[in-house]
Length: 222
Image (cartoon, rainbow, N blue to C red; front, side, top):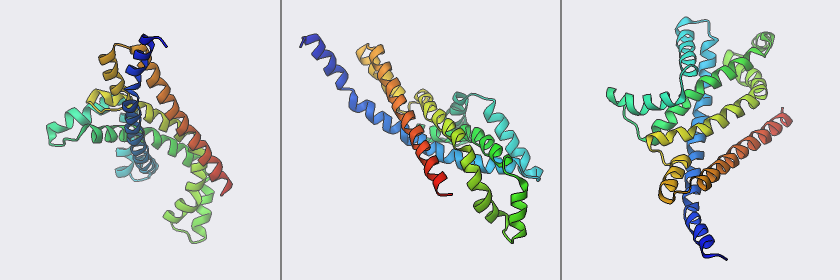
């Protein structure tokens, strides 16, 4: 084998462990952000549907503001602006918070559309049988909503995973930042950007396949 080719593969191969480790950081941030965004989105959707203005208006403002502003601005606000008010976070924590609250606004609309698809008569029938609002929501409404919104939730989860690349701007050593560092050291942008793209593709595909498997499994158990 040509010596230049051996040298090339040795150079690229030395960065493979770092690329894989940075993928683990991406998945860790993404999974935490997705989980928190689902919780936040559910409460925001319920709040927006509330008849109480004290609950509805803040939720409407939150959804309106977060959906109308870029994710990168959310990251900068959390990491650079909040320390002026005494709230300082590490890059990792700031990234998770920013991605969670940003995605949560979209998840809220997904939940709200799912809730709107459930006939009101089902909830009224459950309450007529003696179920309280919480029990009705947990046993009657939410199981149907989840089945409806899984595809939309999956799309938003994939967007959240891809948005982890924005955290390179606040020095989170995820895949994009590690790729940029490798390119700066080797001057091989084509190879490393292609590798990063393929790794993102693998992660989003795995997330999508897991969601599809869970949707089929959930459908079989209801």
